[in-house]
Length: 193
Image (tube, rainbow, N blue to C red; front, side, top):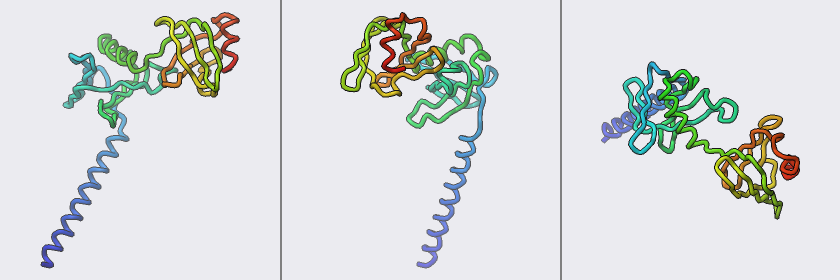
């Protein structure tokens, strides 16, 4: 009977050591920066319109494309991640321009889908009621209506003239140059600036 207990205890210790080793290896993989280049990576489009990737001896049937600096450097340091709920990073593209043109276009397409952000070209009206602002605007995709909160986080200045507007559903809109709007339109934005 004592031999069985000793073996069980030893098995537990062996299992614990194995888990620690696996955890250590996984941690090292997460901390390692892997750059994806035209020499070591190949992207392709799946039948469903998603992006797949092969790098080294590993193939990924679907990957996600994430921008590290979506507003300031959308074509640099692009993170490629597994397409599951963990979104574990596979590697990083340092500069999109370093890939072949066809590969660049596939990645840009995925970026446009993930970071869809209409450009507001004209502000028709903004009504302030009960802590919310109701927008009626023209974008590069047509006329739209959306609602923002009146808090300071709804409209953020990205530069002296560039604004980012986020509605209550998390959709983003861009005003590339506040000063290109008419005086009347700029006056409507005084609620936020």
